[in-house]
Image (cartoon, rainbow, N blue to C red):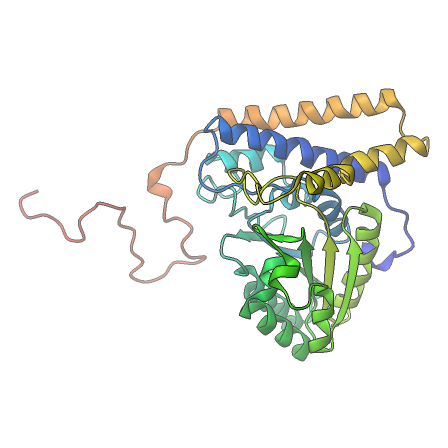
Length: 344
């Protein structure tokens, strides 16, 4: 029986908290690894968005599909991908989920049905909509969940994708993770309608806004959205959360005031979830300490796994250009001559 069919099922509060804590400690360790030059390129963290990540992912079946953007480490972990393989990909190692060639922004695991993080803003939207069309065409039971940031709602592909999804009654949930800043620009400064879920009305689509710092509220809203999507009613779900650090690990977030930073820390979803469990008597101080140690050990093991993994062989650089062989596919490595050199 699918989770979407058990809307009255109680959420696993302790399990959600552990997953949120694992994502928090993983991302903190990733930030440290970046300063140690173990991670290169761009690196965007889910710090502060853990309740949204876990709540959204807990509503899906293993057979459902996930498309996300470049802030996707937490989604990969919540989808059940081993943290060691995620960290190895961040390190650019061969045991990573994308064989070391994707890095932080391009996690991909077909078995987990995580069909990519995408570095181009909104690049995932048409692809996710196409996957939902394929499901509808085959008459399958699966749902697509497509994550996007608040800034993505202002690009053309957002409107095109929602329009087609509504016209064709596709099984898709567009989940806007509204951390209230498109890089360094507030939603109010960039969007004429800052309540982003209301944009669904333009396509006669159901839209809902939820507190992204409340893992149970997100989970319940996502369960409702997924149930509707399975019936061919696409949904625009907006989760309002916070981003505890800058847009990427190199962004000092100087555009934030001290009061804004203090408010974000006061609303920290991981700390709030732990407090709620202790207040309810579900988690003792000793049990919480043991949980912290268990998570620390898991993250430490992920780092050790990544450190021990070998870099990918440069000869594999073009191995995943196409899903199937393509005639005249160019396999020449950079710097290699197009034609054989005479006398060589």
